[in-house]
Length: 258
Image 1 (cartoon, helix red, strand yellow):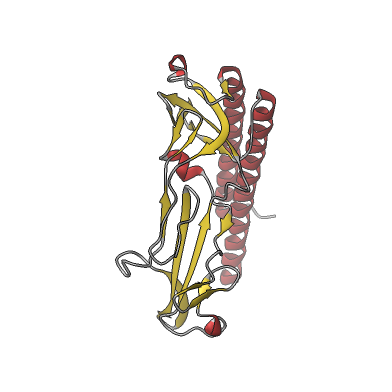
Image 2: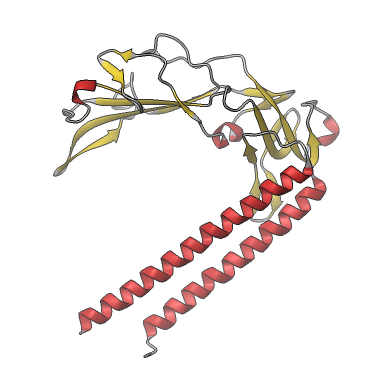
């Protein structure tokens, strides 16, 4: 096999990403080990000022007071987080596509995420915590919104679902359903009765949200190990992608020269 400049560059790039991946994974493992030693388990939701600035794992049932309301719905959605996605069918250059609608385009119906702060015991969860929590259900309680009906995933004009016209809308409401997930656990830094990002190391900022009850260090160790495995899989796929693209471009360039 002939060694070319392109092949040398590819090997160097792949080797670099492999080394960086190994460093990152080892850093994450070391950080996890240290966090398991330092973490303070709070399973009763009681705030203690002595823990301010320290790494805590707060677990318990979610409590919130305020539902989320949209003008087009007949009643509120009982959740602290709802993602409304609005898409409009239109022509884009030479093709027809569904594109999300912004507030600037339609001030009544547009894509938006609405949230309300909630509590785990004495701890108020807002900001980063609300961003980290994923919605787990699609709202379908209301049968119709104007001339649109629920079709299984979204509200739209049912008769034109297969053959939409320019201007037709699709609206989806995704929300966090407390009937599915009653407990939540958050690993972060305690700041008064709130939680913030914890600096586990220089390049590892920690604010982990687990939508299940983690009330022992053993359970926490298990989920942290799963996070490491996810990191390894992600970086491995990225390296394979870089290698594949490099091989493709080298082969393509060789073919053009031929």
